[in-house]
Image (cartoon, rainbow, N blue to C red; front, side):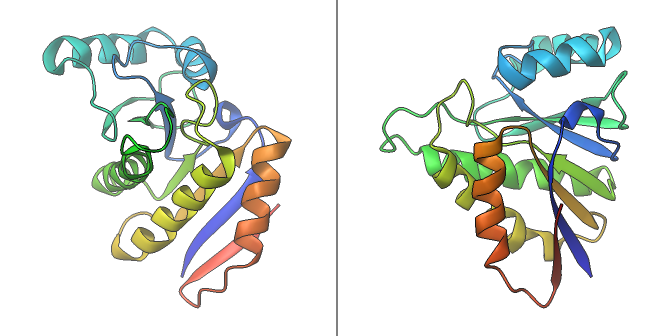
Length: 183
C-alpha cells in the first residue's frame, strides 16, 4: 500500500531518496526554498544545474529536472518549476499540476522509494495556498498508484498556514489504496 505523509518540518533536513525543489526556470537558484536548497546542497548540485542551464536552457514551467542532492540528506534533487500566480487565467493551475506530476514521474524514473514535496509556487511565486494544496494533493493521490517505485510521498510544510490547509484536506480523504499519515 502506498503511503502519503504530512509533516511540518524543514524539507532540507528530512532524509528521503529524492527531495523536490521548488525551482525557477534557470535552475540556478532563486528566492525562498530554492535559495536555501542551493545554499545547503553545495557545489556539486550547483554544477549540475549550471550544466542543465547551458545544455537545455534551464527547465520550462511545469517541468522537472533531476540532479544530485549534494550535501542534503537525499540522493537526488528534483527541480520542479511551478508557475508564478498572475490571476488564475494564464494556465497557472494546469502548470502547477504539471510540475507535481512531472516531479513524481521523475522520482519514479530514478527509482526513488521515498520523495518529499514542498508547497510549490506558494511562496515568492504567490500561488494561493488553498488552491495550490488542492492541486498538489489531487495530483499526487491520483498519480501515485500508477508508479511501481515510489512507495511513500511526504508533503513537507514549513509554514503553519500551509500545514493546516494540507491537514484539513488530507483529513477528509479516504482512499483504500493509499494510507494517509498526518504528523
